[in-house]
Length: 427
Image (cartoon, one colour):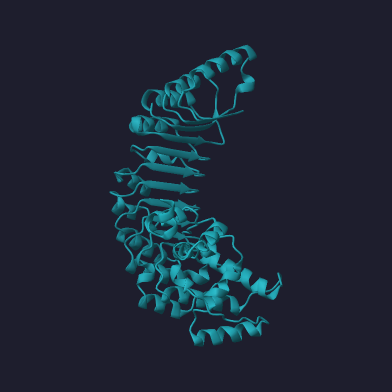
């Protein structure tokens, strides 16, 4: 078996192994030196997401060798004006075509670091040369034949994309055709038009997105952004994960309602810092929804939700105890992972504990904060015979008489399930 792997006779197995090392840059470099077969498999992995790694920015220079002669000439002049003398040495491979993940924020950051390193000046004020390099690289990636799997759109205020980028995207439809993960980050007014154009191009060329993340979406953005997002959501074949964070307005302009089109495929929803409204009732129609994570929400969202789930996570959000108990009852034996981490005491924790004990015996992961170390809690834990992971932060241990506490701790230790693999008790 080992000799076959070394000789490259089992490429699928070896590729799976190397993919597990995608964040281990030094290990992948070592693998690339083992043999020609290993190099052929390791190099594409090394270059599929270079801008998100911790590697030094010098690798950017390798891309320049793949530029056309005219682009090289213009870049050289631009750099020389800033005192950077860059030689474009030939490379054996066209590294640009291996790109699978493009994060514009990380791309800009790496270009900044590359310029700073070349000038040896940490206080350098970036000008046109930064945007020029970013546009050249973006155009190179598109024309190289690369096909993205993940796209993260986050723009700084100073980033400007040239019109030729959008023309090149129109001529190279394969670049966006296989995207599976779309993330939208911080946007500024001066680049709303560029992001909208990118999203429109994306909507025309892909139906394979399974994950959409909308971070820091602002209700003050132009309506065209929301209309384009709705079109993207509705045009996907099987959206499985939807994440919305940092949105403090109650107006979503139909973006949430558009998820009705994904009711037969959506499996996980993550909501953070959101103000809930009636649009969120659309999740009640999602037949395959299994996981719901609610974080830092300042309303009681569970009043709007009515379905069975296997994973529920509520962090730093207001909880309506009655409706939470109803979710436990509806989810019943399906609920396996539960995380409740609040910054205040539960309104009626005995109701919650009783509902969990009565309806949810199959929980394997349980994490609860601000809970009393009560006999009902001890009884609940004893009832969870499949429990593997348990974290409890109890807020009343110093209020319980010492003798009562000793008896309760002994009882607690005796009823801990044999399946338990991790236990953390905080006070």
